[in-house]
Length: 314
Length: 292
Image 1 (cartoon, rainbow over the protein chains, first blue to last red):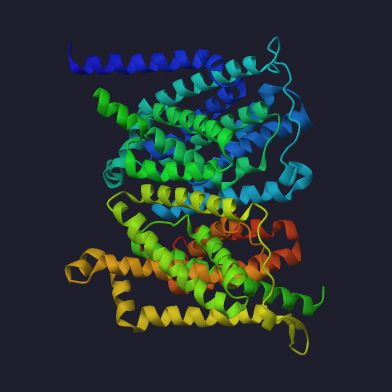
Image 2: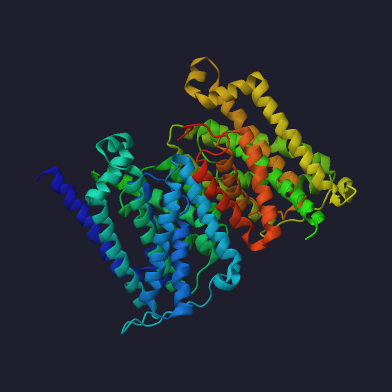
């Protein structure tokens, strides 16, 4: 058996393990809502990885798409019509449009400048939500988002909601893998590796990067919409820049550029946060130390460590 | 709306702008040196305010003691952070160092919360600056005048230091090409330490200056930090003049925005930044292809 096949078998074995874990997770996790939260952040950080790991763009404003998706979904469910599909669709469309506009403007700048511009745009949405109290609830967040039944599906039950979210996450993961391996995804990665060469072949890097940015915004919005359903409310903090920071950390701790890495990273961080916050109020102190340590300790992320131990390829 | 009210608001914008200037100067020179954004910069600013509070309540209630020692202590602390925390990381891509500063920010903020509580601490206007100055057509608080003057003096001092002294020339040279400076036999790591100490010291100065006019809480630096990113984007990264002019512009936009319609004040600066990016992508004084 060639090493390539062994590799593939190992990979699919781990993928299968992860799927198995996901299926039984609500019964293992301390409580179901925590399992759902992990799924949502797994989806969010996976979406983020499309931008950071595959397009090489360090966005620090992804909270905007997550939060906008959550707010749009919540506002539709409360004010327009209590339909989950309509709410999620609105959320996803809103985030995608926001990603298109802010992406169009910020991709004009590269490197650190790009990072700061995305951050500033996200703050803009944060301040709008903060100040427009009559529409968004302001500091208190968007209260009492309903969970209407979808046909025969009653997502008021936490377990049902978990599997509802899981189905979205699985479909999104499948789509993301398809995107990454598509000709479009390959071009994006080529631009990341060598921008000038990709340009000289005739690709327009800005357009491809923008495409990936919008796809990422789409999935981030979906994660946000599901988050609104899970919490029954939208916290203002979903738009705050620390949320952007958290998703960066989850992606890097898990291992960027792998899609599966961010899933593991968000699982680890949210679980740890839950456990630590049971013992002490100062979980943010410990998490901060952990982030600093992870930079020093394992830069390839958890996936990197796994790869080394198990002799995985890329 | 009276003209007097507009002038007062212009002055308020200037005061706010001064805080931005001091913070952005530090942010910008550290960026120029290392090519990283220091996410912990807002936390250092907060630490400056708390240092001033600690000095004021345990060592001497005289404001001048806190005013003189806080920037020094913060500068030493910043230099120590550089030597012990950041130095081992320079071989890494900027992304990881930024993540590191993000973690450092969380640690510093939470440490202060653990020590002083989450409600913040009271900090009153220093005795010698109570009252206001009569400008003939309006009254304006003495302390705010003091803040504006101090910022002016320090901005000029930083500018003179960087443009006229030998050490300043070394710093500017290292910003342009640190390898070459190293090859010329100048101890580059000492220069980085100095730059860090200077930048964090300025953040400490901003902290002690802002303490009497701001709520001193462990989260006071968070949103200021992002506003400073707008300042450096508008002014141009790594530029001293850019930080100063950008800081004042952002301060005035917020102050005038409050005059027009308070809810939009903060949103305005981000809109302004977006427009600015379209017209002039490198900011006012930004250089071509600098750390891109």
